[in-house]
Image (cartoon, rainbow, N blue to C red; front, side, top):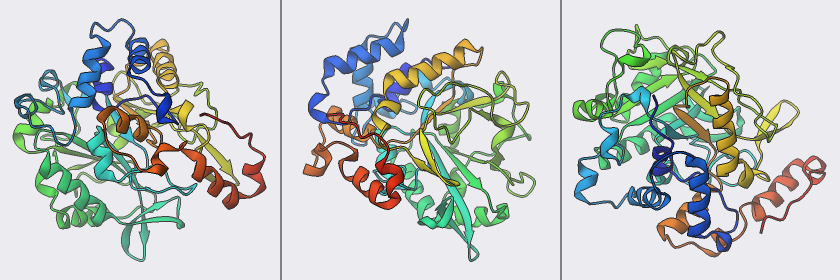
Length: 366
C-alpha cells in the first residue's frame, strides 16, 4: 500500500491561491482535511510537516529522516508518493514556460521528482520545449549541475529525474553529461536488471548507499550501455498528458500500451493545456483551479475508483503553488508576487497569440 497522501502534502502544499490576501491558515487546514479524508493525522500536524521541510531545517529530526520524515525511511521507493515538477527547466513568464521559480527553489519547496525535455541542438543536449526555436532553457549539463549542488546540500533526500529523449540521442551522451555534472557517483543502479515493483530498495537504503538520484528516460534508454538510465515504461504507467479538459475526466493508462497499474508505478499528469495549431501551451488562466486541492483530489479519487493504486507521482506545473508556499513559510515577496498570478502573463499571452486568447473568457480570481 502506498504512503498516504499526507506525505505528498508534507513535501509540497497542493493548495493554489492566485491572491495571497485571501489565503488563511484556517482555510488551508479545512481544504487539507477534506483531501486527507479518513487520514488520522490532524491538519495542524500536516501543516507543521509541510512548513518544517525547508532548506534551512537544522533540527535533529531532519538528520535522521528520509525526505523529511522518519517514517519514510522504511518505505520502498515504489511505495512513496511525491510531487513532480512538469517541464521543470522551463522557468519564466512567457506562455511557453511551465514554472515561475528555479529548479533549486522547486526542490526547496518540496518537489522530489523532476521532469525535463531534451533535444539535440547541433550535437549538444539542450533543454527545449517542443522545439528549440519555441523555448531553449540551455544545456542539460548546466541543469544537472544545479541538481548536483542541491543534492550535495541535502544528504538525506532522494530525487528522481525523468528525461524525455525525442531525438533519440545516444544514451552515452547523457552519461557524459552526468559525469560532467558530478552526478554519476550519486545515481542508483539496479543490481540485477529490471526491478519488480516490490523489489525496490527503501529510501533509507538509497540514502545509506549514497545513491540518491534515480534516473529514468521515456524512450531510447539502453541499460546495456548506461545501466542507471532506466526505461520509464519498464517501471511507470502514465495518465494522458496534453490534457485540455479542465475536469481531468480520465485515469486511463495512456502509456505504455498494455501497462498494468498493479505491476508498475504510476504518474498522474495533472497539467491543463490549450492548443494553438499543433503546439500545446500551459493554460495559465485556469492554473489556480487546476492546482487546487479539489481538482487534484478528484483525479486521485477517480484513479482509485477505477481500481488504480494511488499515484506515485502527481505531476504538476507549479505556477500558483509558489505564492501560497511563500505565504506559509513566511518568505518576503516583492510587489509583483502579491498580484494575481496571471495579471502579467495573461497580457503577454494575449499579445503573443493574438485573437485566439483574446476570445478566451477572462476571469477575475481576486
